[in-house]
Length: 318
Image (cartoon, rainbow, N blue to C red; front, side, top):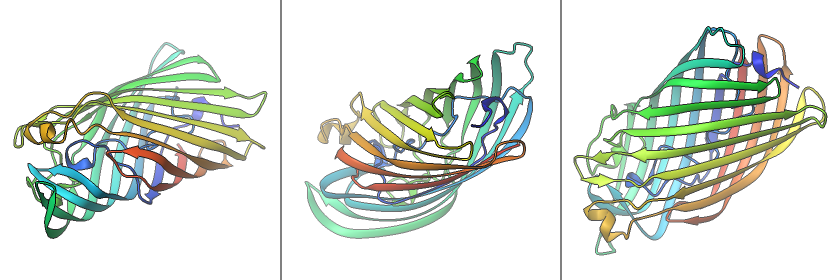
């Protein structure tokens, strides 16, 4: 099994399928089920220095039936969105004199492409079908400080807060804003725990986060706070190969607020997903490399998309 103190996460992730999205404004929130949980995600490297991440993320989402979605002050129905996001992530791990604590900072630069279609709605009735595509720099986000606590070599905890800034090209009710800009600030406090049970060849990862949204000043819409939990269990059959499972839940714990949100009765979401994953460690020592594949099926969903997600990830240790 890998040495958690030597791993710097550089992920290449591809998510394909009908992926549930948050029932917040635009119906595409900051978090997707199972996105943030990663093998050894609770480990902040002990060694100081820079790292660089390239993380492509792709997903297809659909909200069908009679569900109305608020986008830029307009209600839409039958929304579909194909999104390709390429994250460029420089990270710096600081030198610390305390062996039990590691500190790091990261910046996320998303370059996106999105194609979307939807039907404008009036009093629940469809009016006209619209489509749009756009590309460019989306809302950037950053982690000012991640605190990694090493209880032991096999027991690690990472505490951080992501901050999303409204830097993308927001265009109001235009579908081109989907996946590009939300015109509001979001903070996402989160904690990740990793435990390695080497005697049994097992790894346990848990991620908990809260997406807390500010008001969109253009639409006067404030998305409710969203709770996100994802867990991963991996059974290693050798130092190079393991199989496991991912379970994820996203639950909106406060109502959306604003003129349209009141018409939608708070527009709260809840979704559960689960599926298998496979992990292959090609090289454990620096420069290390590991690959993972996971499939997450959303088996229940309310006010959000029900579908499947496929994730292919490659991690490099520098």
